[in-house]
Length: 455
Image (cartoon, rainbow, N blue to C red; front, side, top):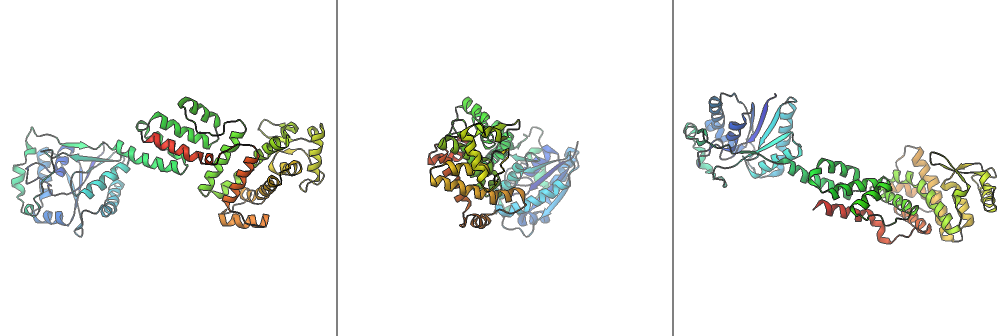
């Protein structure tokens, strides 16, 4: 078994309280935990006392003789430290000290810290460092003998008879109580992680939120946990799993439930998140499948043409627009004529995967609504110019770069927000009925998650 390491600030009642003649917290922890190495942190005032009479080291040595245990004592002297109530000051001081101690520890060594001695700033800093260590630092507190606040003699304690107080230390009695208690850090860690989890949810980072949820599973409700699972599945467009969880827990998060239309809306929401998080390159790379589905829906719902009638479906889910199938009907032959007359194919259309590029000329030909035609043309130009560049080149895609590229492609600049608004118009044209507030569906889901986490 490895060594036990002990770090302790020194407070006014250490090593033995002159007001009660009981161990101070530092000595009491030494008595009951028997650490191998001790690190004492001494501010200006406490260091002056140590230099005056060596009280802390003497009492630890006397305790070692009594317990037949050898303590190795290291004093960390902070003579320049007069302001002992500044939390920020102690966080900056204690963190590197603790890290240095841990760096010198072996794998099977353990580190305990005294969160009962010193000023409130010292105690809270050590407790926070212990919480953030997730079990690598064990915080120990010591209850006062009277179960009340300690009395500090102040300057009167500068005149200190070490031998007298050791002889009269009531904790040397065989019947003396062990007043040490390890602080229950798991619950404090859970509170800290829950707050981080909520911030991840607000940033739409559901995978990270679920990972934290797994770590504090015992501190959150089943509903909250499964709502996080639902959010991850939703962001991954696993709508089957979303439906299963929704039915089990009576969650209603998806405004659009109609098959075919729901996937278009939910996919568009993932683009909204990419826009919010300024993942512009990912946004542009992701628009192609959405445009294909939207163009198909517009063609079917506005023009009465089910383009899949003229496609061959392959096992990988690819739909290929097939010349032989187009030639079977008058409508199909008209579509084939449109494709052969467009600039992309120039009279030589061959079987090809269904995509926004070959749906665009068909839509422009059959659509009656000029505003929708304009949006279709605009989005296809954006996809062709920006999406293909983002997909095939290592480039930085910023909002400013998007403005430059859209200006080159369309003759007028567009922001990422304006591109998303154009997509929203096309979704409406596809007869996916969405209310304005339903575009905030993820924020509504986030509010539900936060409500469940506060229960």
